[in-house]
Length: 325
Image 1 (tube, rainbow, N blue to C red):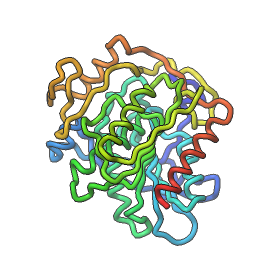
Image 2: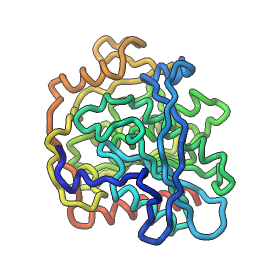
Image 3: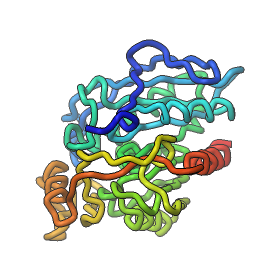
């Protein structure tokens, strides 16, 4: 299992989380769903199993309505580094909603097995959280953003593409998305995010996700006419904003060099071998294919060296202050 610093988590069920700046979080139940995959989410949404996740909403001092950033953790769950984002955001006059996609699903980590619930469900959680925030008088519903880390980065990118497919009247969807070292192994054939401003950042030493794949993902968005940018951080590992030393997570199941699996507009995967759209080719099938490919292996590093966490947060805050005004 991950070593001590990588396994540090924050529970949203043990009472209000209080930030370093003294702002206490408000527990926010979020009705969401557990689609088996993107095809069910888009083409058969009535078949999705309903569920609920928890969020902790932190509001800046003063009077709203406030812009807000949804923070989605990665495969190790909510860490102190995710909650720390709320300190920075609230001090800048931006609300922050940290979500826990694991607790109510009975999941503690997806490091060794990403198939415990679908990537489509991760994306749906983002849309469901945005829908819950839109209904609040203290939130500016025209300025809702989402920031995801690792698997959470994949979630926010997919959510930006999902919005116009499942709710065309909200084609602009999220105002902005910041994807930190996302896994881009699943991508929509046409990643049109409408008016959503997108930025992805990743380190060149990342062993979990492939920088080239993320760069290509952003380029595909720009070819759709979208506002998407990419930044590569030199000499930097995965989760370089955690502010914990670089360490090996030995049970991590990774396959960063495996082929991209594309998603059609109806949510069906395009099989990487046949090149044909196949609704019967499931997320689990895709993950097994990737892990058992020549690229699959165990063990990957995470963590921070030097001032990398500071550089991350400078980039993050520059993006959010510009994107949410």
